[in-house]
Length: 113
Length: 115
Image (cartoon, each protein chain N blue to C red):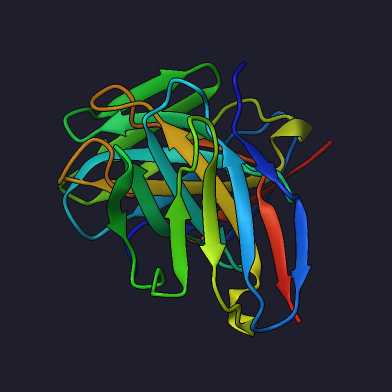
């Protein structure tokens, strides 16, 4: 598998349900970030979790990190139609705070009204 | 909220032509990046730029590519002789420096089509 690989590739849920997206990676990281991309637009940063953290919350977002399994999950609670977008995890290597991010292929989330 | 702006939003060019993609990063940011996304594929890192020099570059960023910060506000990506496979959405991003400033702010992208 590649660095920053998400699953599932696509997810379709009903408004109000929770959406869980997973990301796996291969090498040691400084931090892991989740981004959202609306169709044809740039990426928007959602949340960052550092390698020494296990869980973080931001509004309806909850991200977990398991460095022993080299995996992360993003939970969006009480989803809304406006959450429909592609979601990417991105890993920053251990080499430094501003090192390049490696993105996964993304997860397409569709939230049905 | 401050944002990264990119121009043009769309660029169509003939194979072999030179293109320059322009970006205005967020004014107090110090790290600048170019990423690209071929349709339906993942976002790929091209280059990062700090203190007026390239900090990191990927294997994609070969001699056909160059970056420049010609003045205090613009950050450009030049492709000297475009190929069909350069067709992609190109994203500029910027960030602050160091711990606590790792998140990237992306522009809306330039869709480059090479014919």
